[in-house]
Length: 360
Ligand code: SER
Image (tube, rainbow, N blue to C red; front, side, top):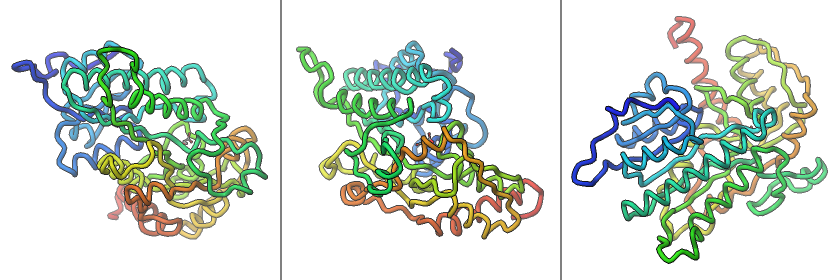
């Protein structure tokens, strides 16, 4: 494990440790957006963990940066000793495509890592006497539609339906949702010294995410962001699913906003622990058409990889996110067209113009 210099760990004065919000997987796509949003909110107490050193502006937005693996219990113990953590955004995970090459490692990271963090949260609550809010992004990958006919017959799936995932990542996320519920309500339920309600566990199921600033790594919904970024940079793209492959998506700003909205929601208004989210549902073919309308020279071809397509086909066409809309006001800004015309395309054009030295 490679951790920050112990000299940078804050001193504990009078038995009190400084307060902190913990973000794991801070260097990933969602992490970047979340660190920026927390910083914009005025938070200056973010402790970030990632397996690689954080780079660029986001690094300066953190009070402390740890380079390490969430499977490393000793690193987490040191966190416990150094900080009073009252909020955790646990983003670190191995996504669905990568996980199919090393399923056991995916399990260790996605389940083992989550278990360590839930235990850390419980111990934090015990030691500082306050509840720890635990925000956990789950995924559309928890679903398994069985076959295409079932997928078409059930175009808008509710939270409790079709939970038969076919990827290790999906199995891990679904089980971690249960672990969160267990730690929040039933952890050590027979122990005399248990601390009831120590963890306030809240979970969102992200659909495929599309960011203008970053590319995902190792996911199966990656065909949409890859197609767009390739077109913007003038690179030919061979899409690994057929034009008809359809799942829900959401822009990164909508995902970040939803994450913070759920984190800040009044507990009394929450009717569930796990919430579906969707910005829009679109097929790979419709996405390609829209991308071509903005980048007329784009070279996009379809060469389906049957196995990866089967994973996409196992996810629903769209999800029912009425509960999120009703309970905590989820209202994504970007529908299908707006996502591209108002956020993705202008921002990607500006980024590429900046890179080529042409003013944006
Ligand atoms: N984006 C994830 C993946 O493709 C699904 O949530 O693995």
